[in-house]
Amino acid sequence: MAAEETPIPFRDLSRQHAPIADELMAAVAAVVDAQAFILGATVAEFEAAMAKYLGARHVFGVANGTDALDLSLRLLDLKPGDEVITSPFTFFATAGAIHNAGGRPVFVDIDPRTFNVDPHAIADAITERTRAIVAVHLFGQMAAMGPILELATGRGITLIEDAAQAIGARTSIDGQWRSAGTIGTLGCFSFYPTKNLGAWGDGGLVVTDDDALAERLSSLRVHGHGRGALSYQHDEVGINSRLDAVQAAVLTVKLRHLDGWIESRRAKAAFYDRRLAGIAGGGVATPPAEADRFHVYHLYTIRAARRDELKAHLAERGIGAGVYYPVCLHQQPCFSHLEYREGEFPGAERAAREVLSLPLFAELTTAELERVVAALEEFHTG
Ligand SMILES: *Cc1c(COP(=O)(O)O)cnc(C)c1O
Image 1: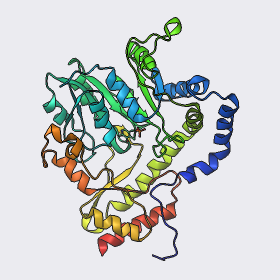
Image 2 (image 1 turned 30 degrees about the horizontal axis):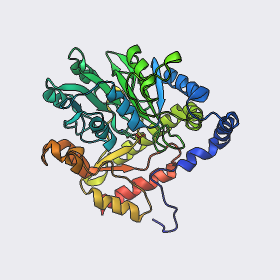
Image 3 (image 1 turned 90 degrees about the horizontal axis):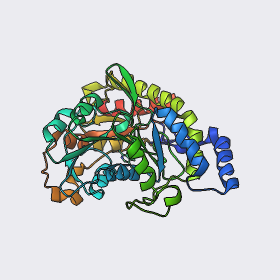
Image 4 (image 1 turned 180 degrees about the horizontal axis):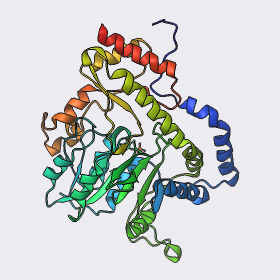
């Protein structure tokens, strides 16, 4: 590998920006001209476009993905001791939001193949105090929503989807393809800049088909204010979590490109799948895509027994790679009061030791993909 070769970044937002810069700058200029920055027509336009894209009835732009989870959980009016089941192998915000909404996070192990929560483990963890399940669609592949939906339905358990990494992902349930975020009672999205649909700052979205919850959400994101003549009356205390118009303008433009970017990500993931399958010694496991899922590859995450050495090897060759996530949430100091033990969730703990996400973005070139594959082969053949 020649030393003069340019580095391959883990991700590169500037390559996404360059070809659509004019379109984006014009949309943002229109917001500046209008001098209307919070909610308003630009946000309403984006919400309508998202409702159509997802096939969701009610869509609310909020300040970030964490607030989307926070607001969704607030709707449950959790009491001390109320339990919310989720995965210990996810971004911190999933469990942080449960805690902040007054719930007790109950972690259950993952399916080691897909990194997503195991429905059997959820079934075993349901108690009389279970109020909700937060299903995370990790890395862009949806959790097993058919069985999870069955567990929630009829038991008074609210199903919330953390779809922060899965915009555009789908799964087939009873022969029908459905979008991530639209299967549970509430779906939460993030537009953090590195997500598959990324803003120029923070942004998030909550979706629901439930009219009564929608009414409360529209109020809760603006301090719980009333409507119309009652607009300074507060029946409950909400938070300040609004999407701003600059972000909405950027996102409206980018949404038109999202499906193309997803197709490109899928093609590059298929390239890795093919080329990494036969690596000598079988030192690498590629991420399986389930037949009934449409994976959007927010991350392309392999397992490697010698993960840290492999990451260092890639870094030496100028190739970026990331570890999502090195620590399980049941092992976080802030959750020590929940009294989970090391070894309690072997699937999640092993994933934390073995996962490595490779460079994957829509604009990555074939030559770059070839170099990543070559570096992995070199590591495994010595
Ligand atoms: C990014 C992310 C969030 C939080 O989104 P923010 O917009 O950063 O607040 C929540 N859950 C998961 C799984 C995420 O990846």
